[in-house]
Length: 247
Image (cartoon, rainbow, N blue to C red):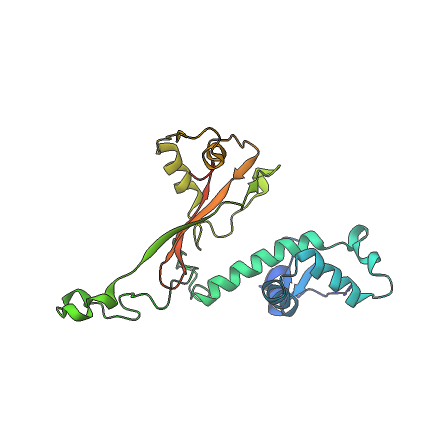
């Protein structure tokens, strides 16, 4: 929809993007906003994407039909196309919601640390959360089992990720704040890690050959993670991208 807006021009008036936020509208840009999304539609998209597995393109097509069911294609022509804006704003909105839910929305001086936006397994023992801080002082051998954790290493060897054509446009909103490790620290580890190629004793062992295959067009070949062995919950800041095969 096209709306006429009269910006506040009083003394010490807030910027235009903050005026839109005060009215429940999220601007697609900050300096001279021309497009805004309601908070409701952003929440509805995140919920629909999570529960119904609906892509951003499908949701945007739905919005076009809600706006004009007779000629929805008109909403995707020229200046009326706001699909890219929906992609960018929805990612920002999701990141802001994560920060709010984890207690970072009301203290601007508090910085988000590694894994702070991910929830750890609620059933596993956590000092100060579900067990006392002085748990090591418990001398009862019969109750030591409740202080133990079980960790397993798992991997998805089909989750390939292609290299982007414009790496400068790949902006991280929460680098290392969730389950994935921080990119810079992980690259330093990869540069220092020694590479050892596994030799196959078989004539045509596909698993070994696949691990040693060159995949220069892929940013990541697989994904690996550490998870709770009892409840299968991922550990925060312990999910990594594999660079070459199952290594």
